[in-house]
Amino acid sequence: MTRWPGLMSGHRPDPGGPAIRSRNSRTSIPTTAEASAWAEVLVRRRLLHATVLAPSGQWLVQTSSQAPVRVLDGPADMVDLAADIQHHTRTTRTRTR
Image (cartoon, rainbow, N blue to C red; front, top):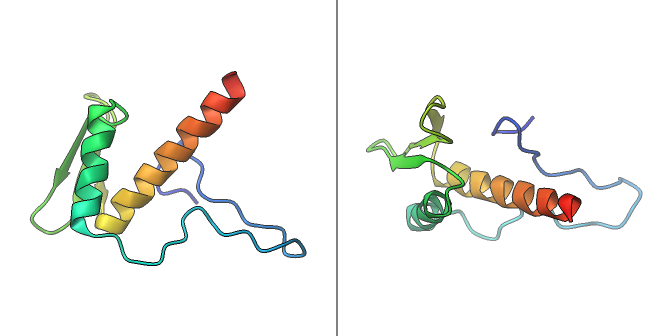
């Protein structure tokens, strides 16, 4: 199940094949500063319409001005969303070449 409709989440490696590190593997927990930086880049690049950090630590995200507002639980979800968007953008660009 993807956290963001229309975008693919990670894939599962073949159980009999070599171990492949997931693109979502991290060695540290994302910070609010990292999530804020990604949110700013996504809006600046017009990949998202708006992002707002709520006092609760949740992120309010809107893909377009007419889209419903989505609620992300915290910095890790914002960073995961950025990774999903980046992955989707890269795989779509590769297919259209």
